[in-house]
Structures are given as structure tokens and as C-alpha cells.
Length: 635
Image (cartoon, rainbow, N blue to C red; front, side, top):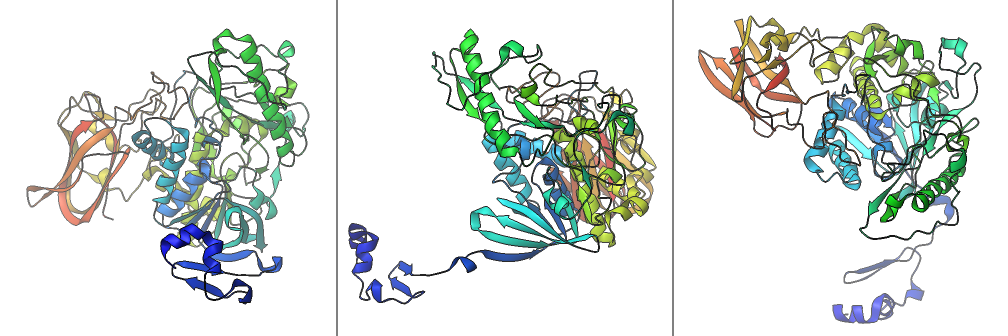
């Protein structure tokens, strides 16, 4: 049959025109007419479910910011890794589905941040280069682009990890369900990381956990209730609106719950309404996971009730119309799994130093009130106390006390309810994610379990994190493999601030009032390192300035001031090259003319040299070039 006849008759007509009648075909037989292929198939429900089994070394469950940083770090450090995400996009609460700002240590008591570096900063910089329009749907795909470009890492979306299988107190596999393909996927692994928030995989493995609030006495927490109870901070629905330039009518949907403005606490402010309000939330003193759908329905009603009130009472809202309303509430709290250490309020307020510190935080103790908007007479959050400087997060809070090959990162770590009120911020969760991903890869490399990393290899874990541009408070790098520390001379062509020798002092940022940088006078400067005897060199690492005291996250209001930037950091180094001295002559071995990271790496064939020279040419906007660290390795 000719192609035009096929389109005239349609599929049924085309089938009828074939030689073999459809009614005479056996089940499963293929009918082929040119490009038309039809298969009549009869199947029972018993064999409709597709099944597959996958083998990986590290299995990361949960594709929020913590899970993304964990998976990328594990893969980069050599482990065959899979990331399992139950949504169609990555990012969790930071995704376009929920749109929570990716805050971390965003504002200490002095009002300034102490921004997270490492993997999460790379992601935020990637977004600045590829999403200058600051679109949330595009942000989803920026994350996807970044993560899926990582060698050694597989990502599967729309897939829920629903049950773990264990043997001898270790997880052997996790059973998953991929909704879009009706496929049951069993993933076998060696090390498992639960970054899913609710922690279903960890819970079904039998990992010990807590939920609710501890009483004051257990951890000597002054902001805890007198007696323990079941209250958990609730999930929130956000919305945004748009100025349409003309009066916009509004009619509330039938499920709207009127806003109880008469009894609302004075801190429930609606002055800045364009991006919604973060306090449209519902908590729980019972089963906050089991109640999620019931609470989601309530939250939809409350959100539209608040908007209805704004439209009726605020003249400034006359020309505004809803532009987006969240359908998936952003969660704050459910299970907290128990590790060898439970992080608590006194640890944080006392700035306790942990020898096994691998992450940090500094958001205020931001405990939302029990009941959320249903407890409307209370403030939406108590904001108990702000921090003067960052606090440390110990590695012992990031692995399970009783499941031997289980790590976790995010809001489900080993901590109290009051501690969670600060550590739950996504930037802080990112530091945990990078730590456990790196630890998991180290477990694979050493053939050990997570607890052994603490008892035998904690120094190596910390050194690798610092090498990969994570920040650990009160922990300078002591890497004995770093040849830069053995240089006999280090100097620069010009200096306006700091000293070139500070580039090998082990700190890769200024800490409080202590300078740990070198800064040039003008562009086209250079830094030179020399050794008394020739060294074998194949890798040079440079950490440039991205201004960690200015926030880089994407905001809905596109804020750009002394605390936030909505562009690529102007301080960042854009162009440089590397020369090595061989037999008295300078030889260029590497160049980067469009750098897009704080951590700049040059790798090349091993060469014997007595000196290196970094020629620093251009920034993204400032007049002077600032560096924080230089490292040199043979391999």
C-alpha cells in the first residue's frame, strides 16, 4: 500500500487492506506491511511487571542537594555509583517543584554568610553560567546536566527505594519501583547512603531512628520542651505571583480555607507577598509521613486562603495574579537516624570542636512552631538564636549505629530536633553529602565499613575533602603528598594583600579576621614556586577567589547586593596558564582561558622540574587577582 493511502485510510483501514485478516492472527504474531508493524499480544497480570537487577558499589537514595553531592563525590573518588531519585527532577526542596532557596550558612550574626564550597558551589556556578535568566525549570536541567556528566555515575529518576534487604546487619540490596516503566529494580551494593529525608530504605533495613522532640533534660537543651513529645516541623506550600499591569480578578477555589487573620501572630507578615510566605505549613505530633497527603490537601487550602486574603485586603495586589503554586509540599522533618553520636544544641551553641568534623553549619536555630499555620497565634518560627561563627558536624553523626554499611546525609542524620532546626538547610546538607560520598568511596577503596573510617581513616577522609575544596572549620590541610608545602621559595610578582607564602598554609579561605590569601596588584600577575631539588610533577591545583562571604544561590527576587550576587562572582579567576622550568627554560604545560570553578586543576604527563609559574591574566570583573591555595602532586 502506498504511503498516501495509509494516511487516508488510517491504521484500521491499513490493517484491513493487508492480505492476512487480523482475526486469523495468532496471539503474539507480528503483522508487517512496509513500515507498519502491529503485534497482537495477550498477557495476564501475573507477568506484566518488568524486573531488572543492577550491580553498583555505592547506592545513593534521594536526589536532593545532599544526595546529589554524595553521589557526585562517591563517583569522582572512584566508586561505581548509582543515584536513585523518586521524582522526575533532581534538587529536592530546591527544585522547581518546591522552590526553596538553597540557603546554608547564609547569615551569621554579623549578617554575612560563610558560604559552602566544593561540589555544591560548582553546581551553583554552573547555574550562573547557564541560567542567567534564573529560571527554576531550567535550574532542574542544570542540575541534571551537571550530575549526569559525572563519569562513573548512573542516575535513575521516578524511582522509589521501597525496601531494603539485609544480612548480618548489612544492607545487601534495595528493592525499587520505577513508576514510569512499571519496573521493579533490585540494586545490589556494598555501601548504601540514604539522603531521602524520610529514610524509607534505612528504616526498612532496621536502622534505629527517632522522631519528635527530645525533652530538655536529655541533652541539656534550653530550647527543647520540658518533656519529650511527638511534634515535628511541618511541610510548606509556596506560591508566587506576577504583576500583570492591569487589575486581575480572583476567585478562590472551592477547597480554600479562609485565613484566620484575626488570631494571627504579628510575625505572620504579608507585606512582601510576591513570592508567597514560608509559614504556610502544617506540622504533626503523630505520623507526619502517613499524614502527608491529608496535610497536602490542607496546605493547598491554607495557601489559597492566604492569597485570597491578600487580594481582598492589600491594594498593592490588585494587578497581581498567581503565577505558580506548589503542588508538592516541601518537608522539614520526619525520621532522624541514630549514629555513634547525636548532634545537639549545646554542641552547636558551644562551637564544640570534633576531631572527626567533616561538615559545618550556621543557620540560626530556626524551630518552627508546633502545628504550623494551625497554631496561628504563635509565631511561625521562634528563631531561638543566631550563630557568631560556624559550628562543626561530626562524621559519627553520618553513619548508622546498627546497620554496618549505611551512611546518611541531610535532615535525617543523627541529631536532636533542636539541632535539626539549623542543620536542615540545604547548603549545610550539601557539606554532609560530600562527606559521606567521599567516605563511601574510601570504604570501597579500603575494603572497610563506615565506622572503620572513623576509627582508622578519618584523617584521610578529611584530607580528601579539603583537597576537593570542601571546608572543615578548625582543620587546615596537612597533606604530606602536597609537594607545594615542600617548596623552598614561593613569591609573587606583586602583592596588595596577604602573602604568597599563605598559599601553602593549609587554609583555603580567610577565617574570621585571619587572612589566608595572596592578592595581586592588578591583572597579569604571576606566582612562582621553587624547589631545591627537581621534583616529579603531573598535577597542579589552584583555589581562586569566589568570595565566600557573599551568597551565590539563586533567589526568586534576584537579589544583588553586598550579601548576594545574581551573576558569576566578579572575583573569580577567568584566565591563567601554567609553566614549568625544565633545564633552565620555561615550558607552558597547561592553560585555562575560560575557568568556571574555584578549584582549578591542571593535569599533564609527569615532568621533572625545579619550579612552576602560574601566569594569572584575567578575572570576571575585579582589578586584582586573589588566590587562596596552590597544591602540587606527582600523580
